[in-house]
Image (cartoon, rainbow, N blue to C red; front, side, top):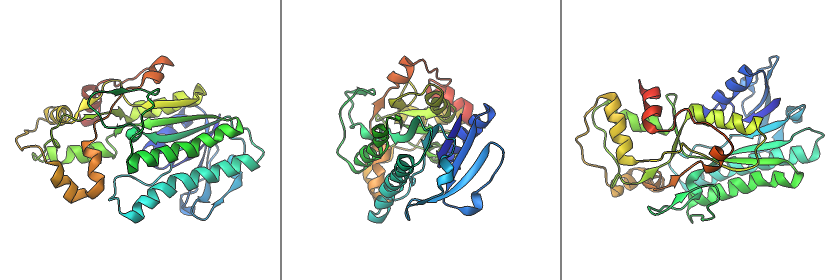
Length: 301
């Protein structure tokens, strides 16, 4: 197949591109930087600028599947201006792709979009799967709702549409785990708040494999891109320290302190969302790293 990827040079996009090419698929990718355009036999770059509404229409030629990973990082401080960027970077790009597919002669059969588990409410009493209808009323949850709406418009074109609601991505190459590991490595690690908040996570390799599974199986609908076994913040902190053979002696950091440091973004550290990949398992997807212990041993050792 030929797959068009946005965000192809990011943490997930880089790994997914490599997997597709290794399995003899072709990749087109969109970039806002002309200097990042490369043209090879099965790997070709095309320029776009969602803010200006411009896109090289040749990017869609021969494409079977679009994987939409582009979007500003949520790990920067959420000023009002940056909140707008978080929204626009996801919606404008999706609308631009939709307009291109709608007006062009093409063979696209599937649109796959990144999404987030932030859509689910905080609770200690529920485990969420893809059929859970509850939606939290918060900035991040509302962002995810709009994000998914921008993806689901592709259903209007009779194109299968899949959204991967992704938890914390465990990777040695960046992302949230690196920020968790850093203070523990220096012997000053600690949990956050009560430490009881449950965090849903996924190993980067399983995440890339799940995208590949969605592509090759032409899935439609929601997939929770999380491992089957969520873990509490306290247990995650202890597991990292144990694997790194580092002490944990400091008290947990209060929510009020992190709010002063991070502003509204502090909620990412204190959210309690127990999410399971029920549909992925039902469809036959196999997780290589189903526990945090396995995943962390693979990444940290």
